[in-house]
Image (tube, rainbow, N blue to C red; front, side, top):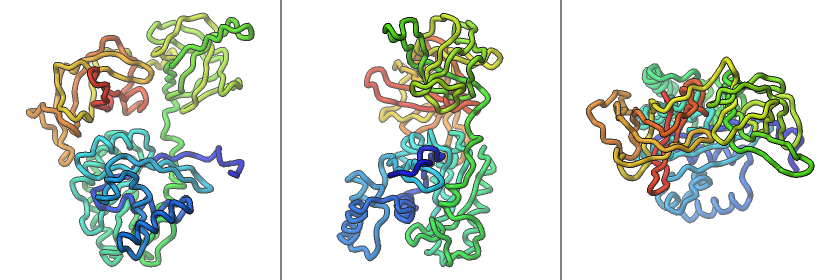
Length: 421
């Protein structure tokens, strides 16, 4: 039975990234094992598979490499989500692939993360994939990056090698917009500095990886200033008990709403006050992200899905012309003749991509203004035109109202995701 404080524990979402064979899956397996978050039957299965492979130790990567192809090739292909908890915090891990051709999967895993955990092989140092993943983390406005210099056992736990890599990474990261970068020397295979402090790395005075994950402050990462409540559905029970009830259900994306607050309804521009806030059938006095609630208003205003409740003096911008930095995820290259559907908060509208401004070389961060062909995993800045105005903020201001997804109308496949500039 879980303890009473279990539900009240903070949740940290983090993504792992790095090049192939840097040890991401092994590190996550080690975290799960050392924090005692593995079922006995899982462990027995992994031990048996490790023996079949002729290994003298447990292959922790097998705990996260779930697909048959992954286990056979010893690589991560899909985004693998793993969950574990400690007495201090709950965690959701997105284990993302290291191969260049799976950049889109890395963006999927990183899109909701509070923190990016980037692995560097101590023998190889900062390579192109390190820069690629760091740039994507910066692009997605992940505020915390923990750089784990892995395989320290293969460089004889050398402090000078660790310092070289830190200097090299800091030179590159100076171009990125990341507020908090930390460095930890580890050996995922042997467990050095993962959960327990390592005697082999006694020159390192910082925290272990788990201690860092448990204690890093993420409370101020959410936008509590710009009030945004996109309406998902209108609640009209039409029952005798709730004959005149009209509530608006949705998730608070940012800001704090309180009973009695003056609000503006977009896009109509009508003003009203919040009469009630209902959370799980109980009335509460306030709500904040990421709560899903039902809001009632003092005035009888016609709202529908896609409308947004905001504050009168702090409103989202309504626009049909949107400047958009996107990662192309489609297997087929971008076709300017095709029609696409935009998914934005609770809105769904059609659009066309009017102009490709440039592609980004994410190894050098240079703009490629001549090359306008967008293929899978390319990151490009484009202008789109929607059939009706969307209620948007820039992604740097608000991750929820500043992100878009593009869907191919013909196949219903998600072909792009990205950030509003």
